[in-house]
Amino acid sequence: MKDLGARFRKGAAWVYIQGWVVTAISFAGGVAMARLLDPADFGVFAAVTAFTSVLAHQLQLGVPEALLRTHEDDVLALDSAFWTMQVLAVVCFALAWLAAPALAQAYDDPRFVALMRVLAALFLLQPAAYAAMAHMRRAMRHDRAAKVAVSSSVLGVASGVTAAAMGAGAFAFAVGGATSGLTMSVMAMWRSGWRPGIRFEWGKAKAVLGYGLRLHLGNTLSVASDKVDTMLVGGGAGTVALGYYNRALSTARMPVRELLGRLYTVVLPAFGRLGGSEERSRRAYKKMATVVGASVLLALSWLWLSAEPFITLLYGKKWVPAVPAIRILVIAAAIGTFRGLLGMYASAVGLAGRRAWLEGVGLVVTAIAVAVGLRGGLEGVAWGIVCRNAVMLALMLELVRRHTAVGPRDVWAGAWPGILAAGAAAAVGSAFPVGLAAPGWEGELMALGHNAAVTIGLGMAVLAAIRAVAKSHEGVQALFELTRLGASRMRRLVRSTA
Image (cartoon, rainbow, N blue to C red; front, side, top):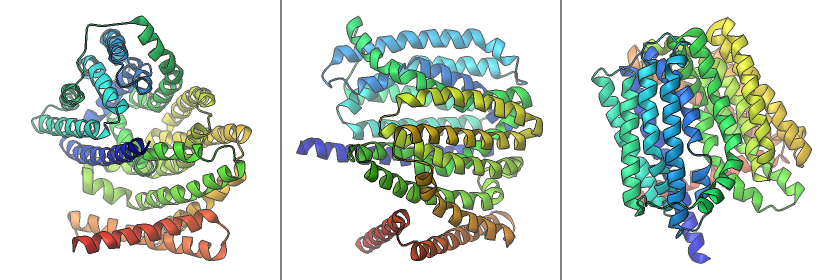
């Protein structure tokens, strides 16, 4: 057990290291691609991947997750799962190849068919990577898996940027994807020691599929719900508008993705240890909602104030038309933060199965909201996403209220300090906007720094006032305790390197 605990801690550390490194690499590559390519290139790529991502999910059928539950020495289960996914990959590739001309009729870009067929060919590389990575992770060799993921990301981004610089246009994404996929498959098999064997046992495959299929429907609906807006915007407004929308959406979601997205693996075991104690569960949720919610909302407040200099500095002036949609989608991201927190809590306390129907509802609600919003252009679509997130938050709250001890008062208790702090920072920053003190990137960088100072300074001042007045609010107290611990560790790190 002692060895297991050590391996778990080491594995968790490598998972987080991998996540942050890959994110940094992808972000840098995205900046380079945005400067080299046009919005229409991003638009047609987003239009194609809206369909290929849903199809790619079908070749998994929850198998990679199910493999993690098998014994690390069960090579027959691994081989059986691999061949199952490989057959599904061929089927999904054929479907994408045949459907491409029909789907292309909804778009105004002649590159759609060729790009979709090229990206669909990458399906054939994925089963080997899924199987080999699962083999390493079920043996808790997260360090090896992390190194493979980082290496494939570096080579994929480098090749994609090189292709874009050479004039490949939207096909630069396919070059990057092919390089990344091939690298991951080859390196994963090499580092794991597993090679596909000509062995298959239906019983093994059935056992893996039995567990995986229980996860698959909800995951597929979630992916489809996340992509239906892209499908509708591209078909209704064209690939140029879709390029701007995709940039606005990814930018607005960035703080939520980075500050909230990696929390799931921490929340599950944390709430699992609370057992059946409803009071402890409620208190833990409120603390989590305050700490995470305040952090994410302050980051979103900064993005609200800094949308134009942020976009101009990183991506160039050609992306400025995305700025109004970014500011609206920041509101959607703020609502989505608390929906995400409730969703993680629901999964942690055993409501994952009951969440599946919500994903189906989300698909329908998103389609309606975007279809109506298209009448108002990109800003109208962005307001549609705000409405979608509000509806889904209400439905998630009702689900949690019915089956757990957490209710609307607990959600509000965890949310209001962050809302007040971020709202005050956004209001003051908007009332006293900073002009560009210098031309070019120097002025944009100064504007970003000024807005960061306003957001952090005023936001933390408001939270400190709340802490002084509402001394019984455990979430705010926990936030400052974590801040103190983080500052203490940073000082020790500085001293050790001095």
